Length: 135
Image 1: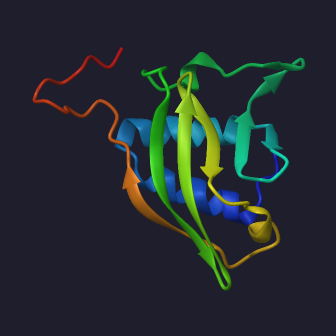
Image 2: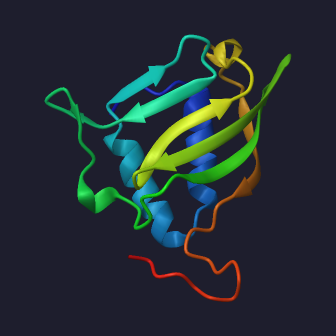
């Protein structure tokens, strides 16, 4: 597993706790499989990968049933003197990124950052009274 910074771990832990049971287990397995973290230049997007032999490789048994892009959660990352709006996204059936409109560099050394969840996805939940298939 790649070394996640404390604020990244705080975000992912909070998101995991808010997901439905089946997704929570898959999400936890995905986080354990992350072995590359790419923080884009301004740190307003942090991308997670599972690499094998220099190629992206997520084990099929850890993937969510839905493979389309999905906003897993949104909320507010905060610490003394800094606040950032956050979105956590899944792509291709796995957690992919933490995104923010502002730079997350101020949080890189923070040990007291907390993530306050505003909303979490309920994948597979009916949105119009008809439950979509999970596979």
